[in-house]
Image (spheres, rainbow, N blue to C red):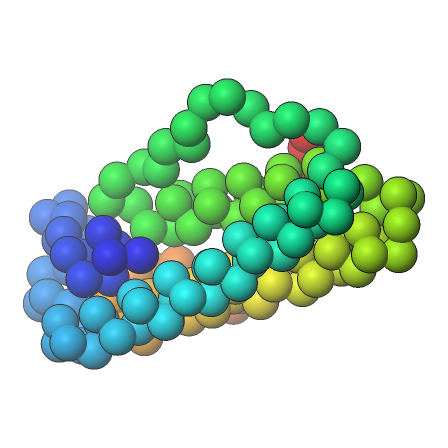
Length: 143
């Protein structure tokens, strides 16, 4: 979050970055910290699922890398990783596991929209910010 919200490195090729960020650094720091806390609640869902024995496969050994200087792509990468983690929860195992899948689904959907809205309102108003938002990641992610 801090890479995209606080550091907010301008891209000279993007017209939206020419006038600098929309909000001051202090405001962007507060927003980045709040978003990090929201991301932690999503992580807690997966930790709870793991401690309840709901995880059916072992996660990949590689560390996910996120593209630098392209926030839209990085948000989609983060959300897709969360969807892959959600698919590793065995919803048929128990009611607790089914609840974990539902909680993860709600949080991913909500978090993806919040990440987009906060960036467009506080950091840079890029071209893709002007398009109507529609969550379609569930349909696009293939495991």
